[in-house]
Image (cartoon, rainbow, N blue to C red):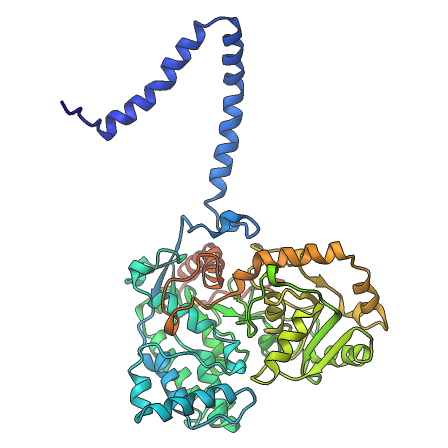
Length: 509
C-alpha cells in the first residue's frame, strides 16, 4: 500500500516540533548528557549569531569577494535594466557601416583592412552580407577595440532571457519596473568613425560631422521619452569609454550614470565650468565617483595563466609613445631616466598587428610593467600587464581604477608617487628591493583576479551568456551600488518648486 506523501505544511509542522521533543528528552538524561545539553544551550545562540551575520552580509553588493572561490557563483540579487528603444542606426548599423569602408589609413587598422578584403573576395555584395548579420563583429583595430565595453554590455542585454541566468542584470520591458535605463549607443564607434571620415570637423557642430548629428538626434529621442522625463536622466546609463565620446552633448548627459575608463577626458571641461577660479580643485559638475562607474579598458593581449608563467629576465618593461599631452610630460621624463638603465626595456610603439607580438614577449618576460600617465591617467596597457602577469608599476597620481571596493589593487600592483619616480635611480632601486617571494605573491594575487577584466563572452556578435565573474557582471554590480544615490537625487529633484534646479554638488575624490 502506497504511503501518502506529507504536504508542505505537514513537513513544516514536523520540523517546528522537533526541537521541543529533543529538548525534553535531554532534560531527563543522566548527568553527563545534561552537561552536554547545557553546553549546547549556551553555544547555540552564539552559533546562530554568526550564521545570521554571515547570511545577512550577502545581501549587499559590496560583499562579493573576488579572492574567494564563492565569487564565481551566480548572484542571488540583480539589477533591473530597461533597454531604451532606439533605432539600430545608433548601434549595430554603425558596425555594418564601419565594415563597408574601403579602408582606414590610421595606425593599427591593418587587421580590419585585411578582414574587409577577405570578405569582399569571397562575397560579391559586401554591404548585404554584413547587413545580414544581426550582430556584426566589433573592430579589431586596437585603437577602437580597447574601448569595446559598449559592445559587450549591449550584447549581454540582447541575449535571449532564457540564456541570461548568469547575468547580474535582469532585463525588464517597462521602464517603470527598471532600476536603470541603458542607452544603447555605440558612442566610441561613432566618434572613431568620424575621425576616419573627417577629422577636421570632429570638434565642430556642423552637419558634415556625422558623429555630432548622431549625438544631437540621440538626445532629441532620449530627452523626449517618458523615462527621461520621469528621472531627468539620472537613472540613464551611457557608455563613454573613449575620452572624446559624446563630446558635443556632455552638458546634457551630466546627470546620468556614465561608464568611463577614467576622468581624464573631463578635466579641462570641468576647469572651464569652475570659471578658472581654482587650478588645484576641479569642480566635478559632470563626473563623480558618487554616480559614475570606472570600467576597464578591453585588453589587447591574450591571457597568460599562472601555470604557463616562465622565467622573467627583464626587470622593467614599457611599450608606448614617449611624447603625450598633459600628464604625458611625466612619461617623457621617466623615459629619459630609464631608457639607458640595464634590465630595463623602453620601446616606442603601439600593440598593432606588428607590435602585438613584441608586447606579448616583452610583458611575459618582465617582472614589472611600467604604467605612467599619458593623455589620460590610465590606458589599456595596465590591463594588458595584468593579463600577462606582469606586475604593474603605476606612476599616475590621479588614476581611478575599475571595481575598487571589490578588488584591492595593492595586492598585485606597485603604486609609486610621481615625485619619487622622477628622482634619479630611485625607481630602479625600489623595484630591485622586492624579493622573489614578494614578486611571486603579487603575481599569484594577480592570477586570481585576471578574469574580472575580460569582457569577451566567446559568442559571435557578443550576444550570449556572460561569465558570471567577468567584466560585464562587475560593471553591473558597480552600477547597482549607485542605486541609492540615484534614487535620492530623483527624490530631491521632485520636491523642488517649478523653475528651481538642484545644485550640482558632486564633489568626490
